[in-house]
Length: 345
Image 1: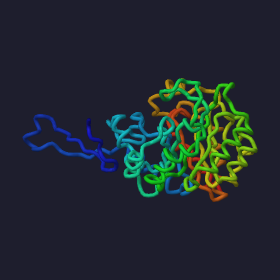
Image 2: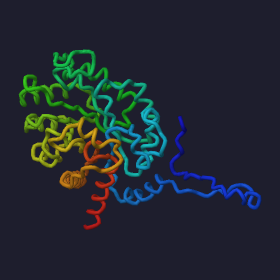
Image 3: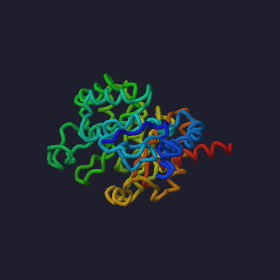
Image 4: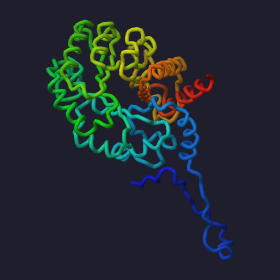
């Protein structure tokens, strides 16, 4: 595998003179060639310098070779990015947080958390998903259990504490900006009534370690109720304002889940409502350009960020490639909107 060139150092090529000139001029001349990634980063630093510190943009994951000359140098393989991509990722001027989605499929081992911690700057926050084993009453087919069979680990506070909370507290507390409890949209026969869900969630949150920051992401709009919001407020847990296929737009969630009761704000931008993940993935790959911009979503996100700032809340904004086509390019657009709006005051 070709070793990636360090960011910011530029690159040089030997420009060989015509053959008949070699005897006159000796060795080939060495002329600097500007690094396109460093040029991009230089322009983004001026935006980053004006972006409020409480606003922390990041992507849902980081292993995308299609981000060459956007986030990474060229010729870095996906396997290399998966293992050692974080030190490159954090060099991007606008990326101040990162999602760790792999935790949704299985608990992240403590050694892996230590490895991530060693790759991140001091105090760099992450937004990590917790396993679906704790957030769905039926198995979804991710492991060995058959899809649709009962899941005894659903909202099991003791098992969650042992397999998720304790490793994060031991190895990753400094970098835990939020742990995401994502409750998926289930087949109708397996959905909990909204009040029963709120009661189960309340009981779970009472028992898990309060030292960690938690947030809840709903994929079923029927669960977004005042009872649910009261449970979050009681336990100082944040609601995730998500942009996802079966949920209302982020601002439309605000009347039920107001920001003033949340300790921090989380936005996760994944899928335009009504669209499907697999189709967006196929049509948007390799995620190196904006394919379907959504101006309404962008304006809502900026409005929510401004509201969070007015309440002195940190806003963690995670963007997926399937939102518009390229997560880091969406982040560039959102950051420019925030900075531009601030300049009008």
